[in-house]
Image (cartoon, rainbow, N blue to C red; front, side):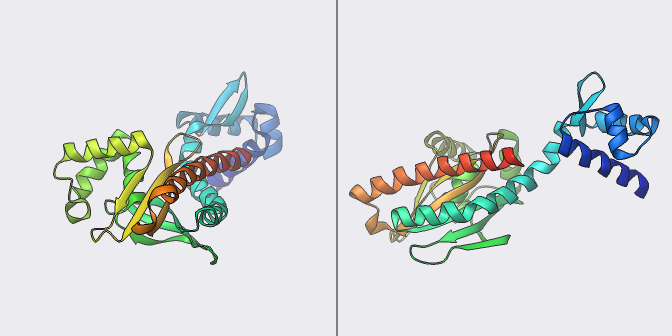
Length: 250
């Protein structure tokens, strides 16, 4: 078993560097006999960890990319989060957070405040309410139908975290409005604080993070309100572009 694992690892190492590789060249670079290599490749083809891209030519397959994608996205997010959080906080002079959904929990990976150090955790930290935050709502709104059904079955309706929502139908309508607008806004029950968040998309088109702003409600008016909304929308687009470019380089 250990020997097979090492052989598969050598195959992936070659294909990750050379992208497309013919059987003979793959055998030479891995040091494996063609008969042994062919048998392993057939198994990898069956689960789409490897794919044929031409006669006798192999490449990393979509199955392996799908397995690796969440980790690549998370690592890329951590790599770009600090800059975008810092830049947005400086542009609008307000507190900025970047959040992800991890195991159906909302986690903040970055926080930045004007003229303060940016806090970034490689160990994704600080849980918060999905239903009760703008970041959580915007991420929930961008789940695909199957993931949303799983979410609803496991988590149920919001209760006190979103008192306006009293049925699954009302929840779907509210989330559809957020998805259409690509922004969630939430004010605290006491009316003192305002939060808003926009999605950040990965190369596959799914929302991999939310970038949010938290500020006193008294400041979220007039020109400042307009500026904050326009700037966070631009920040979401810029962060999406950064993630796409960074992952293309990997």
